[in-house]
Image (cartoon, rainbow, N blue to C red; front, side, top):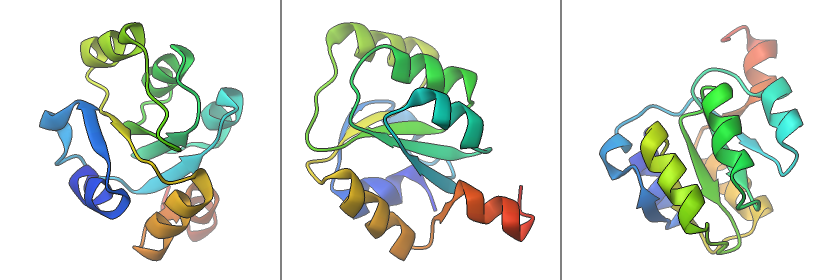
Amino acid sequence: MKLADVQTILNTEVICGREHLDTEVVAVCGADLMSDVLVHSKEKTLLLTGLTNIQIIRTAEVGDLVGIVLVRGKRPGPDVIQMAESKGIPLMVTSLPMFESCGLLYRAGIKGCSELVVAGEL
């Protein structure tokens, strides 16, 4: 699945990184604890979070995540947007809550990170 598909499924607004919407997404990690994201995320993972601070961009960069979707209509500040743009990290916003966002993506075929480990895909 591509980030463009995620945009459609979650009806997101693309804040920055529109040029990366053809990037492949293999797994989703829904979390607000960035240390958990770093421990459990795998290659080509998309982060869904309710956090809007600069740490989400740093986590995406260190964890080599394919993008970030902010849930519950949360809006990032200009510093977060600027850093995401400078790092080439797509940033989107959906009005949906975390649970529904993860469920819709799961139903559409994206796996959780733990499933990829068990299946031997990563």
